[in-house]
Structure formats: C-alpha cells, structure tokens
Image (cartoon, rainbow, N blue to C red):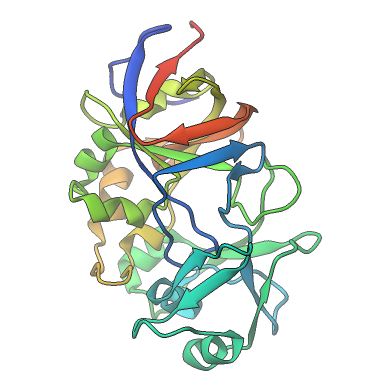
Length: 284
C-alpha cells in the first residue's frame, strides 16, 4: 500500500493519542451530534448512521457525495431520541419530516431504518466538483454501501472512521467545529506532522480499557468536506489539501486517491469516552 504523506509518531504498544471528541450521525449525510461517551459494537458507535433518506425516484440512498442533488442535506441536523428514534431539525431549528425534506430538497424522500439489499449511493467525481462547482453536471460512480461493515446501518465502507488532530492541522481545519467536514466518529488528539494515521493501517488499536479496533484503510475523500455544513461555509481546500499532500492507495486494486483519516472495524466491543488513551497494540 502506498503511504505518501504518512507522518511519524507511532510505536509498538505505546500511547499515541487521546480521544478528543466523539461524533455520531443518526441520519446519513445530515449533521450529527457529539456525545461525551458511547458504546461501540461491531456495528460502530451506538446510534451512528442507523437511518438514511431514500430517494424514491432512483431507489438509492441520498448522500451529499452527489452535491448537485443533495448538498442541501447538510443544512439539516439529526439527533437520537430517548425512545430510540431520531429528531431532524432544519436550518430554522424547527422539526422537519419527510414532507418538509422532500419539498426543500426538490426530490421525494423517505426516512428508512433498514438498509435495502444492494443499497448504493452516487459519488460525484471529486476533482470535477472542485473544477466546475457543486451545481454542475459532473461524472459520478455508484457505490454499494457497507462492504466492510456488518448488516444494518448506512456506512460508506466500515463502521468506524477516525481522524487525528495532526491531519486536521494539515488540512487547515484546526478550529474545533471544522472536524465535522470530515464526518469522523472519533477525533484523536496526536502529536506529529501531517497525516499520521496512515501509519495505523493494518494495525490494531486499543482505546480505553476494553475497546479494540483494526484499522482497515485510509479514508478516500469525496466532495463532502468542501460543502457548507450548517454554519460552516464552503471550503474547497478541505479536499484540495489532501489531493496535493496525501494521495494514497486505499485498497489493493484502487488508484491513489486523496485521503484523510482511516476506516476501522471493531475487534472487541467497549465504551469510549473523551479523554481515553489510544494505543497501538501490535508491532510491525
């Protein structure tokens, strides 16, 4: 695997960072929420990506990865409710249901909690979005969801996504709220320069007393980080910097792509809290 742009600061068995923030997104492609702690199972962070909006015209999952159609999703926020449901609020802070969302987005959508067989999203070619803007007709691919995740949930690939503060600094996203652009589950405070989590790929991590993960791949970046996220304005550099500084091969057989953060699977379930230490527990 190519690791151009990988940073330093990793040692077998040593602590390499701490959990600074947790994020979960109860509805795929909507803004999320920030718990102080959460249970993590094989299906990821409890409450994360348990629902999605289904495009009734195409049968595909609505995703801001195709911004010409769905950039408006990032103006809405989703929060888990005590009864296991979800509350969606619009830019005005008022609740929004399927009818309101369909009208605002200009496409009929339904909120679903069961991933349909073969569920897929449309992913606009990121470089074409950068070159021509989010309203342009650009090429896109159709990607099946959750190839490295257990059944259930609406994950792009794997059930957990980690990003380090070193990577956020490298992309110029140092302000606390800017991490939302990359939609991580765990923001890990680390030392070092650049994209240090590249060096975790293929390794096992321990977080807190019980949680154990295996890092599967760097996270390829789409156009989503460049888009407006609630009050955060558009920021093309959020993709342009990884494209210039961290173009790596995520998985065998794929081309080198702009990456930031890493995907992981859960080996041993546990609870994660802000302040938990992250350690690398194997050796290369």
